Image (cartoon, rainbow, N blue to C red; front, side, top):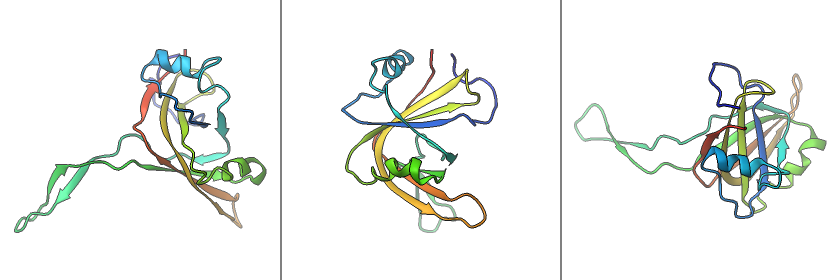
Length: 165
């Protein structure tokens, strides 16, 4: 396959995770192929299903506004960016999501794969990040599906995009 090369809706985008056993995140397509392949570190990873909305992700801006006395506009300088949190909205199904709920604040680090896809087969863009499952909040809804918010705290930079062979 190749990286996505056209405009499209990422309706086949997936989130997967696996407990981190000191895995080194891939840094190239070849390492990504080994990582996800048969016998690879990410084999038998777990899909998070019924995702309603994905957050934006990547490297956040590291700009700090510094006010200057007597100036109408503040200056901007480069600062240290904070590791972002990721909030996913899910259509909540208790029997499906109870496994994820059990992992909240368990102290373990996980490898997360965000696999952006516009179609069931074909081009993709896989990204990886390490982090923890910070919270899982359920929101009962009287007029729509019951929902939940899954929050992940990240602890590494993102690697990717990579494509499947």
